[in-house]
Amino acid sequence: MSKMQGSFTAMITPMSGDGSVDYDGFSKNVMFQLEQGIDGILPLGTSGETPTLDEDEEAKLIDISIGLVRDWNKKNGKQVKVMLGAGSNNTRDAVKYTERALKAGADYALVVTPYYNKPSDEGIFRHFEAVSKVGIPVIVYNIQGRTGKNISVPLLSRIADLPNIAGVKEASGNISQMMEVIETVVSRHPDFSVMSGDDSLTLPLMAAGGDGVISVVTNLAPALMTELVHDCLNGDFAAARKIHYRLMPFFRAAFCDGNPSSIKYAMNVKGLPAGTCRLPLVEARPEAQKIIQAALKECDL
Image (cartoon, rainbow, N blue to C red; front, side):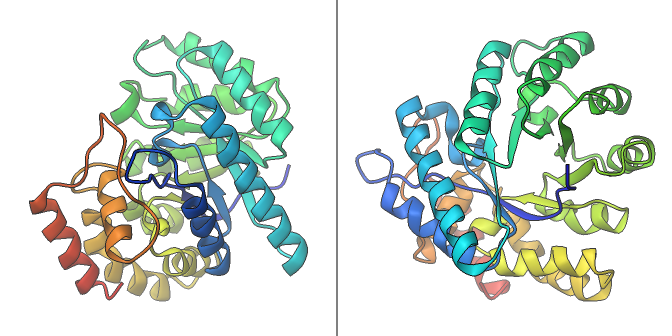
């Protein structure tokens, strides 16, 4: 299993005015990512409003993603990766979605901590044990703010011992925990990837030995964030720091009214397909729109 590194975009799902999925807009967004040099894309994540999509819609988005990336790689001699969201708070569904990712030809499946149920550490371990048996590399998604449960370092270390567990998307917001993951888990599993789940923590995490980011901001600025990540991978932290501080206002603005409402508004401003959100999400509030507009101008995006 090769180690996952680089800049991955947590793709939004553009919607038409009537609330239907804008598949043409999604295709354009995927091509924008590819042309801007992204290392990988993640459809069907949180940023894609996956809880509001039905399985037919998800299947079409998967087909578009896999098809466009496969054609791009073949034509250009690239190795852009596709990671598919496969999480659920029902372990049987998580296994089914992980099997779907494998069958579709994805490179990775992203599996979030079971949410709402608030299982014990043993329950979380068994959940990931079940999806690990599918056979596709699995990225553990740790985001306590959305799930109500943090995956501690000892628990993640235990999960990492399972077959096909390829890494973690770390969105705990706790840089000390992330460094402990590198110290204790990566030291035993050198191919285990530690990816930032927060755009603003990409630089500090990579300075500590992390491998990249699964990003929201790259929906709008893929080239810049990919350059930042590659600078870090190449050890040029001075260059990465310049991009980091240039983008800091937008790192804040991209979440000022929730995700993906904020990034969708920014994309609409810049003429990228995004459209509306599906309920229970709504468009960014007027005061948030002003913050986003100001950040776009300040960051020269």
